Length: 208
Image (cartoon, rainbow, N blue to C red; front, side, top):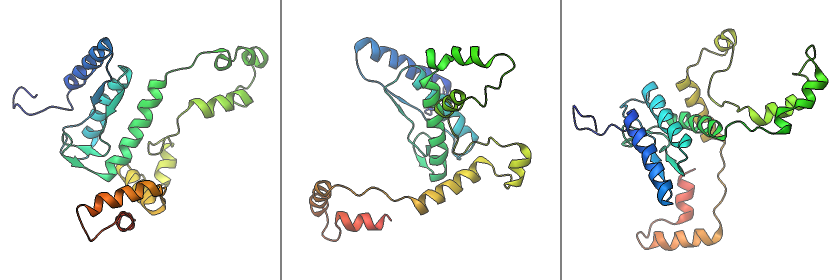
């Protein structure tokens, strides 16, 4: 809690530190662990993203079995934004990449390539470099990697603008996989227990 107000401070560093300690205790007792990754911000702003990144990264590096990022949420899980959901997706991708670490073996060290290419050679054109680059480097969906001139030519868009555009594109283009017939039947039974006006199929159509 915030000791000055008694309000839950889920975005504070101490919240994440307690989570890390909980992971260590869970490992000691052989239990699975889940760490919350949340923000106290009332707006979906920079505070939301840096607090959630901080918490998610600490959860991943501590070896938690699950980080409860509650995608798209803020204000201690009380608020939700589809635009923040897009940003959180990027946060998760970055945290997962960091948690993977650096793989060190004969192939990734590429000592043979270094010996053959030599100090005056071009490593960027070597097939091994290209294959390693595709495997090792994450591809940002939202983060800006352009030069300033390219960024300006593309409309000088900030992260919220890019996230909103991606959200609209996903809503327009995404086609969810259909549920299996057995699952649809079970959903129908469950729905009919509570209402006579809807079915699993009708609810699925409403969501499109």
